[in-house]
Image (cartoon, rainbow over all chains, first blue to last red; front, side, top):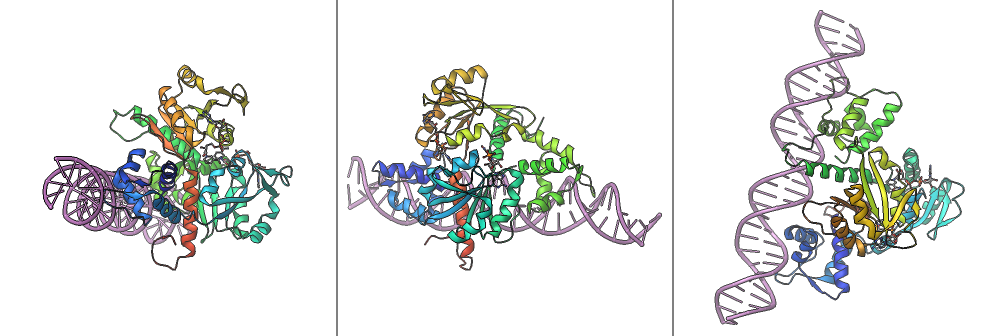
Length: 210
Length: 210
DNA sequence: GCATTATCGATAGCATAGTATCGATAGTCT
DNA sequence: AGACTATCGATACTATGCTATCGATAATGC
Ligand SMILES: NC(=O)c1ccc[n+]([C@@H]2O[C@H](COP(=O)([O-])OP(=O)(O)OC[C@H]3O[C@@H](n4cnc5c(N)ncnc54)[C@H](O)[C@@H]3O)[C@@H](O)[C@H]2O)c1
Ligand SMILES: NC(=O)c1ccc[n+]([C@@H]2O[C@H](COP(=O)([O-])OP(=O)(O)OC[C@H]3O[C@@H](n4cnc5c(N)ncnc54)[C@H](O)[C@@H]3O)[C@@H](O)[C@H]2O)c1
């Protein structure tokens, strides 16, 4: 499922070039995957292809978008307008998959009242009020780790049902609230381990520290 | 393995509070995991605990760090000093797990020669030269998607063995080079799907579009 | 028109990650 | 001291995702 957005990006490029038919083999070659894997991924979306021809590009795109929920716009708020928060606020990639960050919050009084990338920044105290008024259901945490739990609690109180957390710490959420934890350090660590492991490939054992 | 960095963060907090013993149950409660799962994760690092007592906090931290390769410093370069690139350049979380971004590159002549968060920014042409000279082996791509493949090729030419790509597109790398793909849109999409799926929980079927 | 080939979908087998069960051990309590 | 309990490690089981095999189908070429 995590591969579908990438397929989508690639297929959009093809569609723009006027290529209206695409086979799983083509996609697989592009990404170095097994064609079977790609076909299985695509089958998940309900798209059907025809033997020897493949899939109709635009049809396939529509299926992926529908499956991923990109057809309807989804709204979010963001808390913590630092470096990372500002980058997300300005990221235009969200809109192409139906997401929009409506408003940001920060507890720094210097930031509240300003605009970042065109988005209004409000004091943290107004979180609940604004979320309820706008009927937003998703919150993004890009504040320091030590405030993450407190912010998550506030978000739950504000009626949010989904939280996307970039702080490298655990937060507890009650049943019924979805927590999506982002962990960039983990990704980088895994890259480092794979590298180290590859170099000492001759050693047959697992990846053991030393 | 992706959970270990988070355990580490939590355990560091405990260690600072002077708690020198910790059981898998304690960790599990913190994260809402099964204690068995935690124990298995920890066992992977080679740490040994004692029945009824648990693990010695600092010993456990050392095992995790060693296993994750955080004991030795690892160096990287970054290409694309936009919003996201600048955030990463200024992120102090990397240093605590042994990573350091030495230098950044950008093809915008206005940026080259400046410093961002104290890190020098150089013109893209010097990538290969600098990487070879500094013997850097890991590159981070935070440039627009359409340039990602070109940059990846340059990185491979520059002798880099690991690439961390934030562009929402596929890049091809030859055998022997590790590609770690970051995909924030996919994470957000999954959050959105989980939410939608939860709401229509009564419907027994899979998560089908509509 | 008929063999050939690319591609699809379905089913089956394999690998890895997660979950459960069990005996062993070392503290705590009476 | 002896019963009790929390916790560990090992083993076995289950689920999920990935890979391989297979027959079916539709375009191409002779
Ligand atoms: N910068 C990165 O590249 C990066 C990478 C991975 C993870 N992270 C994590 O993302 C988070 C933010 O990182 P950053 O680099 O943007 O930090 P930053 O210091 O640039 O920004 C933090 C922002 O949060 C605000 N803030 C602090 N406490 C707050 C609170 N209680 N309520 C609301 N706002 C509050 C601050 O005013 C500041 O604007 C951190 O948890 C960090 O660990 C950052
Ligand atoms: N901003 C985000 O929150 C976010 C989130 C997810 C993914 N991304 C991805 O990360 C990448 C960067 O995003 P951003 O928001 O920082 O964009 P940005 O436009 O702010 O920055 C892009 C930077 O790359 C530089 N650049 C362009 N072409 C280059 C080339 N060929 N070589 C070297 N440098 C080049 C530009 O000069 C600019 O400084 C994009 O691919 C984007 O899709 C961004």
